[in-house]
Image 1 (cartoon, rainbow, N blue to C red):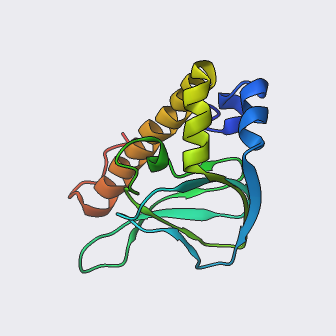
Image 2: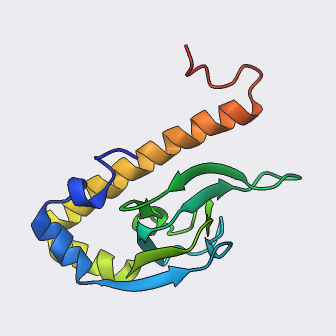
Image 3: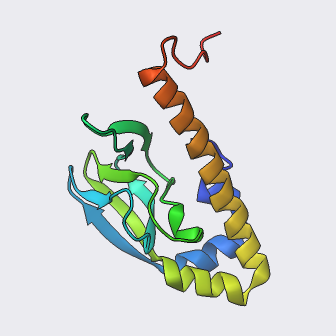
Length: 152
């Protein structure tokens, strides 16, 4: 987690407040799948408390956990980019409370207010870039002969 990917620091207060007007509170029991790779990305979440694991399907193996997300972190970025399909999976590993957002509603507000839309796009794009890097490092650690090389 970096401050640039946490909504509280990535979005100005006026944009946070506008986004939070679209949120509703949800809870997930441990083991609950929030989404599966390849499914339609029609919502996203910001974790209030608990842990959500992002995982990647690996044929013939259990899903590889790529990253664990906690308080204040965005769960899901695929909702923001066509074709709006999840690129990995996610499951609650502890009891989770989160704010849930309807993706279409947020995209409509982003289209109506270009400044808000740009702020959300920069935030979500930053999260996507950070997650892709984390995925690369984790997969190298799991499957490359010498790991990711990040220890040097």
